[in-house]
Image (cartoon, rainbow, N blue to C red; front, side, top):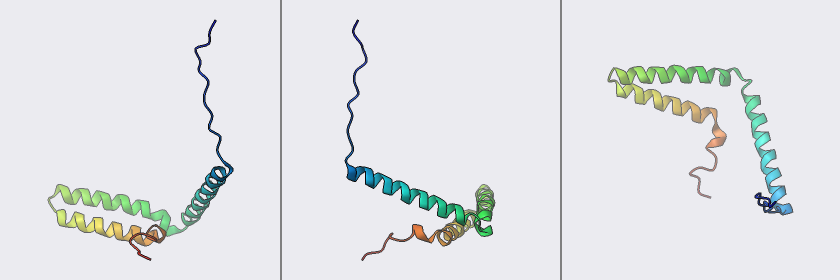
Length: 96
């Protein structure tokens, strides 16, 4: 009998690749821990509720042909999100 299963080829990762992957994993875990710590703040816990209310308001405004109000609410929400997450803005648009 012949086996129809083919052997898998293995690509051995270099030590540098393994170190880089572990460093990425550590950075990701640190970011998760920081985000979790931030969610303990009352403002951060309430933001998802405010987002839902704003989205509902935007939909009602669009349904009643008040696109101007919907756009204003969307801009307000974007401004708050940028204020809550300042680290996401770092590096964007800066030329050094």
